Length: 398
Image (cartoon, rainbow, N blue to C red; front, top):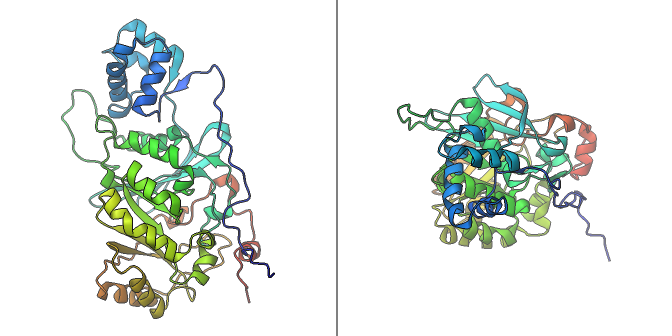
């Protein structure tokens, strides 16, 4: 029997163990769902009949006003505030570095519990501001064109660490309202995309709980249509995401044949294109979403031919979709090159004429390594040679 093992592993050779919080320490309220919040207050001695009201009061202080000091929560009794300060805390990831690109993009290197680091990117645009957040330290997967995929998975982020990225960005942008000031409807963080480090559907429960907090109408209050979850194609969790989260979905598609996708996105060896597309056909109905976004990175001589474009529109026929064409953003040691601009435009034209929106994503934040596919925590950056990365990706180099 011939060896059918993949040239790059489908997932990292790492066992993810659920993190245990220190015994007896104060509980961080950031990231708790309302039910978890209520249970924590009752466990701390809040009468059950008052707990729901107390959750609403504290929730608004934390997520609407951005308050971190219990002493400032003036609609709570003084002794109750003292109890909160004794039993709970409001803790966000620590900003290690903050870089601002020439185009206004901001990249934050954040330190979380255990001294680990993740990256978060804010992209300002004319009518909106998009925050790209991470769900894992490193990544479960080994996509050969993605910088994060060269960093081993360390652990999943907690719901609090995911929500905390949104709050850190709002801190930096000065977006919390001032009590008594006229209401400002401008949203600097108007959209959130789970497209940073990690595969969100391999950290499902924490991502789901974090998005419940972010979507809550009495706090951060982002509509589910303003949140996009990007997956490489973890098929068993796609229907669950539709039912339990209900946000918009983007898929890292990147190839039109299993042979090429196996190499670019090795999870394709587990759930191939046909299996993935079958799951995607049901998503708009289950989640009440308008359409699915297919992300397609343009790699010179790999997946950018006219034949690829024609196969793509044939494959997705019948799925409400748009195709985001992403010029490859190079990183140190990357085994690929960006497609020529004329080739990208020709590809886009074929897709557009088939009736699909096919915007070409303008690279943002390249000068600070903040563009799509470039994220990797600074402590792990540039540790591998180009030859080593190419070998792991199963690519021969002349």
